Image (cartoon, rainbow, N blue to C red; front, side, top):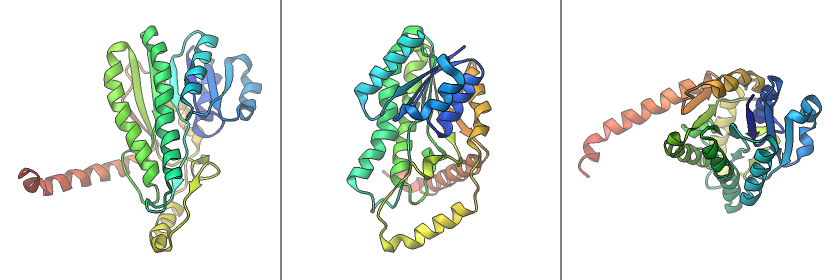
Length: 268
């Protein structure tokens, strides 16, 4: 039996993973801004689920909620930083408020929960932190500049973190899903006010997305359970087949550009 702490568990991937963990007999502290949204899980799994209210942008609340979960269950084995949303719009269109809010949730929210669980996991000499990034954490697309900024930052933070905590018995995995049918681009999304000059870019992006059907979030459950059961989990794990072609193209292009400009670089 493992004990999980999952943020953003009311819907989407967090909800799927909470149900998968509970369904096999694990215990889950599940957080949501509105814990009443967790009622289906409460009804199905009873005392194995601890529903908790949490806005991950509130650092003090993150520490208090993690402490409450650890006190309730006695330990925390897996922490899943899943809470987040998509900000859609061009970089020029993005307001200061929108930019800061995106980073507060997707980056700083994960940082606060990570800092809160680490003393517990260090004391246990065991634990596994799952940082939910995206294929958008290693490759970028137009209309998602600030979302990419939050996920690229999370990836860098997490790669350093993994090296820092490995000697202490704590594992870190960056989970990089492809497109899934969640609220990320629907009810949870925030949109900028469009500038007309960018409409051709926006239209091309819409056309590309229209040709790609999102995968079922439920299909990720088995992969996540396999990941957390692995004695030596990877630093990174894609979810779905879609990210592979994107990543291969992105890294191929980067290597080619660096090599093409190597002579210039080495004059510096």
